[in-house]
Each structure stands twice: as C-alpha cells, then as structure tokens.
Picture 1 (tube, rainbow, N blue to C red):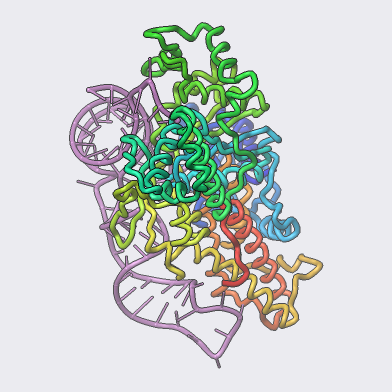
Picture 2 (cartoon, chains in turn blue, purple):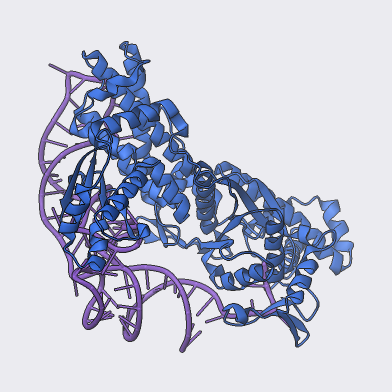
Length: 551
RNA sequence: GCGCCCGUAGCUCAGCUGGAUAGAGCACCAGCCUCCGGAGCUGGGUGUCAGAGGUUCAAAUCCUCUCGGGCGCGCCA
C-alpha cells in the first residue's frame, strides 16, 4: 500500500481509539514542499476539532499518543501550527524506496488503480477540412499524455480520433476544391462564399490529375462536388496523420463518421432508440430531441426538415457505438468552441442507457502564441493558420509538447515561442532533459573510473546529506502523482514535478560529488542518480517528451 | 440578454479535498569551475491573491454581488 494510505489508516485508527470521530474522506494527507513540515502532513485534528468541540492541538496530541507506526517507516511524528500532524519518513524507508526504484526501473509508479477498466480517450477529432491548428496540437499533446498516464495507472486505455467525413462540410470542401481546380485550369471560377479559403486547397487541387479532374467536372454537380470532396478529404486526412506522426502522437483507431451511415445505419437505429424513449418530437418538419428535460437550454434538432441528420445525431450514434464497443468510460477532449454541446450529448448518452459519468468531456482551452512579448495572429488573411506542422518546424516536438502540458488543460495557455525556441537553461524542457543527460553522462564517466551499479544495493544506506534526502523524498512521490494525474485527468502536474525533480537533482549533484575515493559512497550516489534518471525518464515518457542521453 | 470559464509578483503561471510564513520560472543584479556536462549552482525582492460583503477556528480556495477578460447561445461542424 502507498505510504500516505498507510498513514491515513493509522491516523484514523488512532483517532478512533482516542474517541475522536472523523470521516476517513475528510482526512487529508499532504506532501509539504517545505521539509520543515515533514514528509507527510495531516489535518485530521483540525477537521475533528469542530465536531469534538476541542482544541485541535490537544486532539493532535491525543491522536499521536495512540498512533502506531513502524519506526522503520516513520521516525518522527509531531504537532505543528494550528494542529497539523507532521510525519517524517525514517531514513530506512527512503533507502528502501530508492533501492526499489532501481530494481523496478520503468515500472516504478505503475499501479492497478484503474483495475483494468476499459477507457477510451477521444481527442483531436478535428474536421478534416484543413490542417491541424494550434488548439488541436494542444489536444494531441494532452490526449496522448492522458492515455499514457491511464495505462500506467492500470487502465486499459485507447486513443481514438473521430473523423467527420460525412455531412455538409464535406460538400463545402468539395465545392471549394472544385473551384480551385477550375481556377487552376485558368477558368473564371467564383470561390464559394462559405468555402475554405486556405492555400492548402490550391495545393491539393494541384495534385489532382488533370484528365481525372476534367472527368469529374463533366459530371452533374450532384456528383462532381462529392468527387472533389472525397479527393480533398483523403489528402487532408493524410496530411493530418503525417503531422500527428511527426508529433509522436499515436491513435489506436481512426473512427470515420461515414461508418455510422454504412450497413444498417447506426444513425437511424440511434434515432429509433431515442424515439422509443419518448424524447423525440416533430416540429416544423424537423425531429427534435427534448434535451431541455435533461437540463439543456433548448431542444436540439436531430433530423432536419430536409431529412438529413445533424452532426448532433451522428455524435449521439457515435457514442452509442462506443458503448457497444464495451468501454466502461469515455473521455472526450473538445475545443472550447464546443462547450455548449456537452449537455445535449451527455443527455443523449443517458437516454441511450449510459450510466451517469460514463461520458466525460474535457474542454481543452485556447492557446495564444506569443512571440517577443506580442500575441501572434493565428488567422492571417486568406485563411492561413499557424498549424501543428509549422509549430513543430519552429520549436521542435519536445518543446511543443512540454509547453502544451505546462498548464492546466482547462486554462488558457500563452505559448511563449521565444522561450520555447531557446536551447538554454531558461527553457524548462531543456532544463529537465539536461538533468537526464547529465546523469547518463556521469554514469558513463563513473564506469570509466571503475564505479558501476553494485549487485548489493545496501550501500544506499550511506546517503545522509540534506541534498540526498531532499532528492529521495521527491522521488518517492512519483507513484502517487501518477494516480493523481489519472484521477484529475490532467497531465500538467507531471510537468511541474519533472522540473522540481530536475532541480533537486542539480542541487544534489552540485553539493555531493558522485565519483570519489570512497567506493561504497560513490556506488550509493550512483544508485541515487540512477533512481532519479528512472523517474525523470518515466515522467518525460508519460508526457510524450524524449529523455536524451546526450544533448 | 442568458449560460460557462477565468482574474495570484513587472511577465507566464503553481497553489492538490478550505489549512501553517501565498510559491516557481522568466526578467534584473551579484557571486561560484585546478573537480563527474556551467544547458548547472548559490544569494538578492517584489504581492490591496481584481473589488466588496458573507460562511468558517481557518478563505487565493466555498457563497453572493460588482468590475474586467475569454467563449458559447444555428435545422453549421
């Protein structure tokens, strides 16, 4: 069991023995940053004080008197401040953990917290009508990190991209591409009012073989437009996949909206189920979903008066399909412009039989690119955008991902391009990677000096300097942090952690010379460095960032 | 107008379920390599936590209102 859980149980038991009633869920175990507050800190006495109508410091003392903990685990327990109970790990405990990290390697921090629950993370899912823009790039970084974190926390997690390859935007895309193709042939072709004006469609129109394109033009418009649309769609999806691959983001599946129309037509099956539940009515020739019954602001159209299904019905069918595939839970990452769609879709999944909480929607907030202190305009005239590909060309994959993950997913992000480009200590991603490279380098140096990882790791016992202890207490937080990141569905705490861990290592390195004449001390420090390398590498891996051995 | 998110140091942001003296990085200044990677380390100081009330032993955190910013409110996706 995790150390904080052990302590929580012991404290709850001691409180009970002292006749202090307190709900276990109210008992909070913190990991104070300040070592003066111990390695673990608990508010149990403060929480219990109210109900017991007693002074919290007195209660804390009473609880401590009845507290039973292995002295090889916790060596000191004291009351502090208004009534906190602060606990300090025994040196032996930290030593045991460091040896464990070295022994386990990259599996350190893995847990069964998710109990193998089948969980799907759907992200990016940008319309294939143009290249991926920055907010999609952020979603890609967050989604990929979440999948890694979920897997490490014991979930059976899958990454999925929903490709909207049906519906009206494909027609628009087709009309736009058709116009670009005509223009290429030197014809006067008016560009559609609501078309996609980006340069990329000119390029794509240029990729159409001329005889083929002319043959499409000869078709009646009802066939010509979809022909151009399909071509453009395929090319754009290809580019999106290439960009994502370059970004190091892998999907287990690309689910195409068109699949919902194929075969028996899951779309219509979904409509039937909603109707059977009595949540659909007809008005002005359209079919509406009574989402107001479930807290939405207004009812939503499922089928237009011309008989075509809306995006919303397709989305409901898509989520019904996810349920049928047996996911215990699904997490969707959406852009901030889709915020208003959460209620209606959650309502629809509930009507279709999903339990409360089955669908979780996380809004990935906007990103502003900032260069030399000024906001970079994301949308230049003519519909050109800064794309994922542009960003990767500019700052590189590692910096892009790390910066996207430095902030809470739900918070707006100012992406500092000037800082991200720098290959120096000012840039947090280099700072962390440098620590990893330094450890790799020192390990190689040590080997040259005849110092290697010893078979018997009991020498770790000798690490008693302040900087060594600070580093150790940081290392042992990692497993808990992975679970917190999984629970809160937010990778950003790991980004912060990696920076703190790197800082603790640099301090240790500066003060404690690793390779010295003292053989067993050298080995002990080498093992501590290795434990740090393992945890840094694993943190970076979860974030999707590389952990280089040389820079 | 209605709804959601946000407002913490000069800048970008942490602050976990309400807890201890509100913390980092950047920027600025001054130091530290005969020694394992100086892409590093050590010092130096800044806050009406947007404002006003309220709840609480305890509020940046919860509630109400005000101000300021972002987004949404389509038979588009």
